Length: 343
Image 1 (cartoon, rainbow, N blue to C red):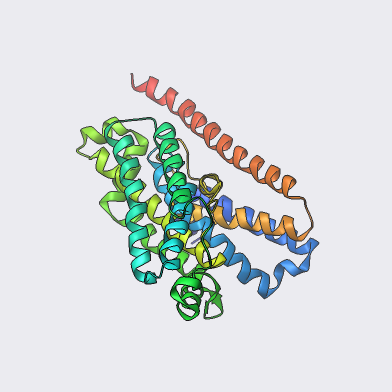
Image 2: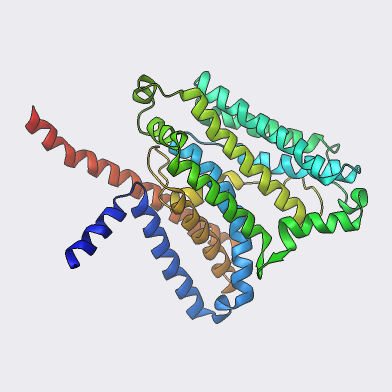
């Protein structure tokens, strides 16, 4: 029985990316207990529900960035698309456009950025850093231009207080079963994209491209189509977070989403998503987003300055990437003797 349990545990941990995810969850538990011991308010129900709501934004953008990272690419336009989403939706609503219509128009605009990213990286093979750096500036430029280089008025000024309250309740302030709707939105997206990743051909193709793009292409995988899908997922997740920020502020802010592309990378790599491609699981992104927000929340509650907060989180991100690189090199070193014996 004991051997069977050990075998089942080994099999579970051998699932691609599971070790990194479990390590992140273990770190999350330790961090949470340590902060709670220093300040018991961390364990309060109100803080926990606020923690869930705050981490939801990082989880959603982390999902989008993780899709891209596993192909061996990166999306620097995420934060700007978040800002563009918030500004377009808010501007339309302040001009009296029905919230549903505003949301659909905003979605189309955000997905257009995803398509452009996919074409530039997947078809023209531009370095993803350069391609998405360009679209980052384009999206932020749109965010500035849509309302004449100024933040919007309150969305209630255009669609009325009742409609604005419904919009805000759905995306940020409302609760269902005692938990903020923001978390339920994030959870639904997580489940949907986790299924797409782990149970569909698209998910297998994403891993294949991240492991070896040329081999995947020779195997019949459409690199352009698959890469474009990952950037569409990233753009969609940014669109949702933009609506959340719009609901939170009751307005559009031109700087909304600033630095979110880095938060998305952090959520992924802390949870074991390899920036080198081919490795990781969305469960790790969930853990990474929770670790990020728990650190931010805990450091804030014990009175640590913002600069030190960023320093601590930055060190953790670098350590996570360094660990991934070291482990990969170690795997290569172990495989060489076996390969030489066969020769």
